[in-house]
Amino acid sequence: MEQMIAVCGLDCATCDARLATVANDQAAKARVAAEWRAIFHSEDINEQFVLNGMKAITRNLARQVGKGSLSQDDSKAVLGRIRTSTSLKDMAEADMVVEAATENQDIKFSIFRELDDACPGHAILSTNTSSIPIGRIAAQTERPDKVIGMHFMNPVPVMKLCEVIRGIATSEETFRITWDLALKFGKTPAVANDYPGFISNRILMPMINEAVYCLYHGVGTKESIDTVMKLGMNHPMGPLALADLIGLDTCLAIMETLYHGFSDSKYRPCPLLRKYVEAGWLGKKTGKGFYEYT
Image 1: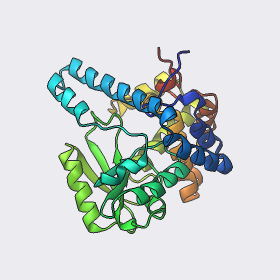
Image 2 (image 1 turned 60 degrees about the vertical axis):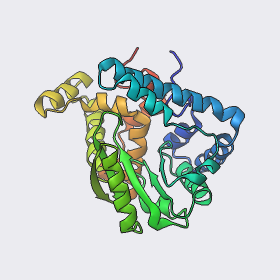
Image 3 (image 1 turned 135 degrees about the horizontal axis):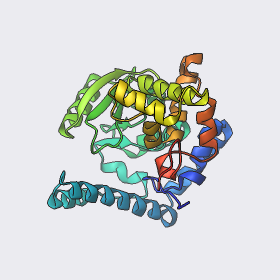
Image 4 (image 1 turned 135 degrees about the vertical axis):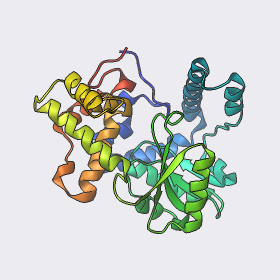
């Protein structure tokens, strides 16, 4: 199978962050976080990650131009506004930061501690986490009032929603600035309070997890499960196909956050979901999940 590289530039099948998350190994998570601090600041290694990310952005923009949803001039303008860096110290000029690292709590904690040191005191630090409580992330900084969730939906250029999550310490000013910024991005913001999974994934992920349980228990085939939800519930995409698009590792990580965050068995990840992730079948980005992709 062809090697699949995520937008972050890493090979999903061998990513230590993914493997540590799947195993829920706290020691491994801490080790990965420490390694990522070194890798992220090592120009001779991370420059390739930057190039891979820019290639992915360029491909996505070219796809939109091809579909007629974006002009060539606008595509060039977007690329012209992007500045790349291999050091978080370059965030010293930022007024607003949107962190979008992998859904790993330890890695996000590490990034926010460094951002807190690097960014000016007035800067707002937002996170694109899809499930980790904002209060936990804010506690890693000396500016919890300026930490907020800004959860974009995938694929970001297409989906209109931006879930804005207020932490317990998030100030009204921080909330208003973030809300207005989402509007300027052309998004439709929706406010959520700080609970595991927020609104979107507290509803979506248990539905996907239950669909996996239906497959696990032999209630129906993957095609039947997706067809029922598409034609019976008018969903544009079946839950198993959607899980493949999101990434099965991400789905598992979010279910783990819900399960441990609420200590409620109704959020227990399906064993089949865990088995697929352990096998490296992560969905569309690796060429195989519940469906196969070429």
